[in-house]
Length: 182
Image 1 (cartoon, rainbow, N blue to C red):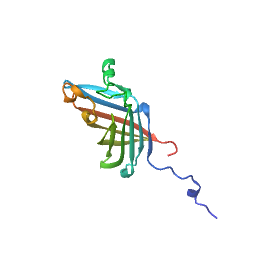
Image 2: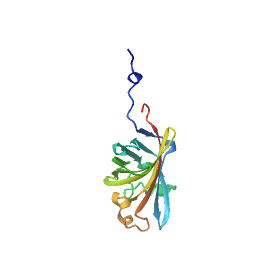
Image 3: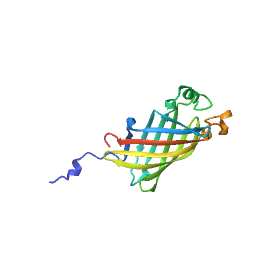
Image 4: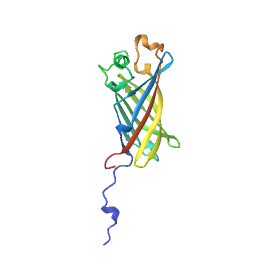
């Protein structure tokens, strides 16, 4: 009796499970101060992704960002953004974006529609991204603009948009590898 080789192989893991390569990933942001760019970055983040570009609608994306890892290049501003009026690290240590709705937007371009939880608020957010495979790795990159006051960032005298702009541009380049066993 012949046994098909496929029956002897272990079952395949679900396709499209990816893990972030931290040393090759970045999450940067640019606010404005008196109309001039005020760049920063988050040094600690984690990305869980189930994604197949041929079937994006079955995907899932979760991004967790350690707010205390924010760095805007100076001790004084780094301390200020941790205060209650800004990120309020005493009460909120993470931002989390979750999407179960990923849609194709054209060749290698996708849109993750989900919810951003930041500083105790939950708001719908659409995160566009470009998907690119490189050998055994993939790169997810893109940018999105967030209105900071939707999340209570920059309250009181800082809520007007002057001298600190209301919109924050967020840019991301996430390098991914297949999860072990996937």
